[in-house]
Image: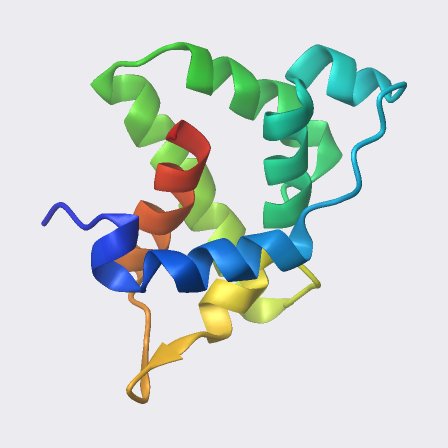
Length: 119
């Protein structure tokens, strides 16, 4: 099943959740210089550990099925971690988000996070 961000939860809802988590841009931050402001902000908002930023960025540079699957696998691990140890990040927000009393499935969570990263 190919689930997109807009088919799972409203785009406005995800956008609002993301906007709350975006950090203030720091122009002289080396990570911003290497990753770019958009990707850096997204990785911080999602709660991706800094040690993984370069690896995730490299996966985003290659658009093939194997790389997308690897990114999906990484997101699955990140989601599983947030299920057990929620934090102050967008992935934790999505893990606890409910639509009509129903939590998002693992496939839906993966689709949203991978969709945000690849957009």
